[in-house]
Image 1 (cartoon, rainbow, N blue to C red):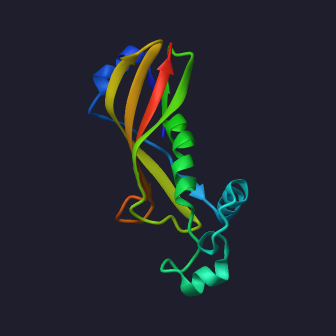
Image 2 (cartoon, rainbow, N blue to C red):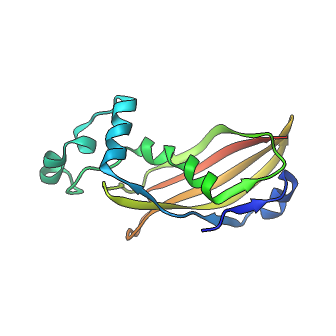
Length: 153
């Protein structure tokens, strides 16, 4: 996928209500899951114990942490969209997050990104992005979030 270049913060207003980008896929390997568990201290067996997950998990394998999936929004968005004319973008938070389905180890995920709103703030603008993360071959999304990003000019 080619990165969508938005010429300036002002150009975002015309994109409200539109799907702005669909990202390339990111591979969610067991090594990535293991590293996330180590970094966060979340070492629940469903993420790390391959044998137990094969036997006891409803997924038949280990699965990514929901927060790992959520943390991948940053590289997904950055790979797909660039807003020119800003000093920086700041993660301002999330209004809503859901994890409707699991991400089994070895999955490929991508995101659909829709711009919900843009509002002026002191020193820039705030965009609300609806990000729906899909898993290759799955019917349900694995994450749905409304993400607030502040673009400072």
